[in-house]
Amino acid sequence: MPDAGNSHHTARPAQRRRQPTAMKRQGLALRFALIIGDRRLTEALQVVCVQDAVTVEFPETSVRIGLSRLLSEESGGVVLDCRASYRSDGRSPRETTRTWQRVLTGRPGALHQREALLREILAARSHAPGRIVVRPNLASLRYLAAAV
Image (cartoon, rainbow, N blue to C red; front, side, top):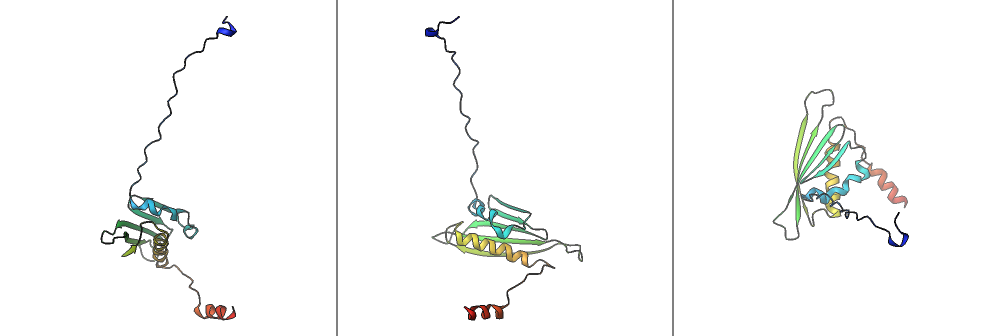
């Protein structure tokens, strides 16, 4: 029996802390990842920001936006290569596609660029065949402004 004043401590090998797995943080989409939680995209089935692309899937529309740096701007900038695919509404069996480009000036991923990206996504969705988009009546807005 070991003496209380002469206790033996069993030497344990030092536990090594596991290093976290290296994450790849590359591509412009990472700078736009905050749109994932935006309330305007709550109807989206999926929102993905990977590498240099943002993809948003709605029930009737698929929007893919490729991101590339605008090299001609001193302060930065991003080119959006947008592509929207509209699923069949039941009357025609084929999918229609629309493509366009936008140039955003400023620092990549800045608030105004994220807002512009969201506007492009939502505008693409509003062009889906059979989708009804309620636009505000300008006359009623004038009436409300006059009342204030």
